[in-house]
Image (cartoon, rainbow, N blue to C red; front, top):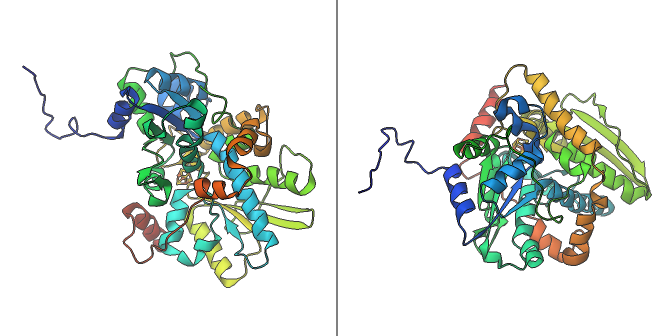
Length: 400
Ligand code: SF4
């Protein structure tokens, strides 16, 4: 007969996301699609000793293929798509004198939840563009099945993300089609490390892998820097500069800000459009900026907000640092900056796969179809009970 071992704490019996991921990856009746966020390639190495501080992108692909993933795609690609949608939205808002300004970025779900729960008067300031996770998942259930000739209902999307806030985001009813979430399962970086280790996969030992398809897995240098604070603003600036001048730049100079709650900022005055861009991290800082917007004293018109200090490389689901926090952060920054510099394409709008997506499938940025598949809406949740983790953060802020 069968021998069933019973764990007294229940730990061995519990089904967590690692087990669920394995089930999806091993299920031959579905097509498993895995995406991983820009920051993951800079942080997962810390779970494998000597790989700390190195770009493990190709090893992640190999590991996921060994686990049974049918397609491994790159969230860097959808980060580029986010820039096309968000940049277009920003310019449209600037041109329309009646629109709500300034515009805040919306790719960090910790920040979006904070606005919904504590600053609902700021909801119209959030870009309606979905996050890179949500954009890739939406396309994985629409464009991808068209490209590979598959039945959309067979696709299961797993995403590897830097934080548990991304799990909450994946469960938003706005990010589902006919009640089925676009993202079926989210694993944090720590859970991915456990998934690999549960099958004896040591990233130090394996050969590099390659992405399966050029579409949805080729990102630009602008896409990969989404993983660090300031990266979204920088990526958007490269594309906005091109739209306004017709010229290309590999970097837009951001300078440290004198504003006490702004990390860095940049000015652009091109083609009759004045941009004043701010990079903010930490919800206490963002809350102060909301006060200024409410008082009408905020003179920035585009504001990137990330909840975590330094952005997603320091997300709550990443591998904890060994040793000096600042050293570890700057190493993780360097991995992403080097990936950007070494990238053959540095701007989102020059990514050939982004062009293909619009030519073949979406038409133009902010088109009707793009709105349906890549934009979202937000709810005033100030009267409904807060998600415990967010309430905890908010209490901390109030206590100073
Ligand atoms: Fe998650 Fe932090 Fe990145 Fe926001 S900044 S998406 S909370 S890891």
